Length: 150
Image (cartoon, rainbow, N blue to C red):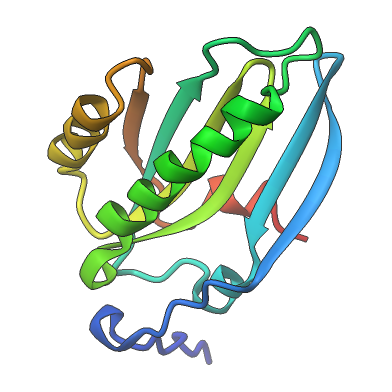
């Protein structure tokens, strides 16, 4: 007999902001730094977050190894804060992975809706010197997240 996992309703979730694991590696010969929200393992495949959202932001002046300068990395803190505020508001989505490599930073988010254009447009408007690129696709099993979590 199979039992279906019971999930806490998204409105009742207490998203942990301090459960991140940092790992380093290589991607096509360039350094890669990945920050993974380990708390999200507890809700892996949550049916109220069936959409994977990717937001990639190329750096303006990456170093030769593709990582940001200290100054630009510091400036990205404001972008990250805005992404967390916009997407995790009212538990509409969960930021699960942040990848830095090859001249860009990418945010992997699981969302309750595929309608994220307004949020991305707000980012583009607020940080107009950056070229935000995004996609949304259905990923009910959270395969994108599983690639990063151990």
